[in-house]
Amino acid sequence: MLKTVISGTGRYVPPRLVTNDELSRLMDTSDEWIRQRTGIVQRHWVPSQGGVGVSDLGLEAATIALRRAGWRPEDIDMIIFATLSPDLFFPGSGCLLAHKLGLSTTPALDIRQQCTGFLYGLATADAYIRSNLAERILLVGAEVHSTGLDLSDQGRDVAVIFGDGAGAVCLESKTTADGTGVLAACLHADGALSESLMCYAPASRENPRIDEKMLQAGRHYPVMDGKTIFKTAVRRLPTVAAEVLKKADVPLAAVDLFIPHQANLRINQAFAKALDLPEAKVYNNIQHYGNTTAASIPLAVDEAIEKGVVGVGSTVMFIGLGAGVTWGAVLYRFGG
Image (cartoon, rainbow, N blue to C red; front, top):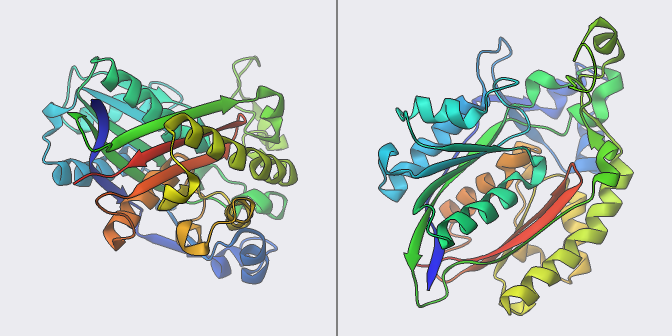
């Protein structure tokens, strides 16, 4: 059966390390306050002088993934780039990444699904591959949050959460008889909760899209209703996990590892409790990277592979919820 398999993974975070103590010198917060509410200890940010965009981080992660897959850039049939923080308002960062890889005709698709960007991207790539529209797809999730955060007391609830980074996976069409590859995917969205996590400006429905009044009001900074997001995630994630397991006809006990989006350690712990999962079955690394949005799952996948937490025969669930709100899950089995 024709399946979508991961042939290589890669991750990259900028070298600038930002601790909770460093943030406490910029705003009214503390290491204890941040750890208790999010589980985050540190995060990586791009250089403060700027000049580094998501396509730059994506290039680093993609180069590693391509090398591990044994691909050359010209082997790529399509690039799918997930981000909420593109290099430019337009065009998409996928085009910029393609150029940096030396490609001049390869199609590039940008998706703006925020925290579920990797899930939506993986499901989209799987559809392209299974319908024979592509054989090799480079899927990248990358974010540069640090240049768009309100580093004041007013913005601290959001600013302490986010980090910069990128993750990439090389996805390949293969005929497998051992059940490896993407087993099932389930995706959902509910725009009624769009204002629970959003960034208002620049906004095309405004004229001008951004002006001094918007800047003074801080409408170009992200805002979040943390309680609503938490409650929604705790309710939706166990449900979509059961849905994707049913779709794949795989029992819960057969899943070796759950790799959730790294939004908040408390959300992931509540998810584990709802499914009665042992701590070792849920992979968390938000402590070291913060919330890297579209990059969080592929970054965690690459790290889990490197650590030997997953390997040949491992059945893994990727799952998450984020702005939109959107949520979903993908079940995947690793092969040799």
